[in-house]
Length: 161
Image 1 (spheres, helix red, strand yellow):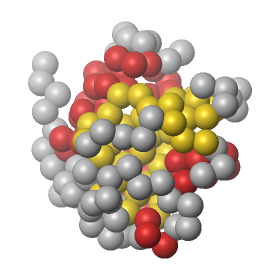
Image 2 (cartoon, one colour):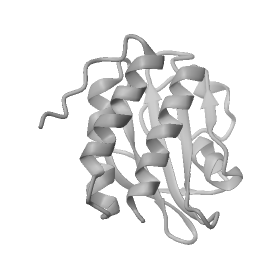
Image 3 (spheres, rainbow, N blue to C red):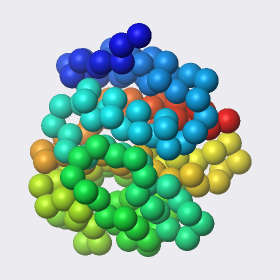
């Protein structure tokens, strides 16, 4: 079975196909590192104009970098800083058109201009971590991206059960 994903050209249709590919990748596997590694690679290859895609896991105190694709990343992020911290703290997706406009943005890659971060929360409301994507293009992420990435995050969380 091939998990190659064509670049997104029609988000409403292609995110459904991408989620199907993600479900096939995690089928029968509950290891979070394995599933995060495969899903970050899948998304990084499928979405155009993305320079970082990956996971941060909550260790009980802060977010710690997990599997990702892109340049080396910040290792630890406190919940009271940055876009990832805001998503984890509020348990809501953060979509930022211009990261330079965020006073406490943590710049791991100076080329990043926009970002979307989806919180990963289990059925009991406990924080697992966040799914983070960066782009060198301002205002790269829209409503379709948000809905599609939230569905992929839900697929990841469901795989851990």
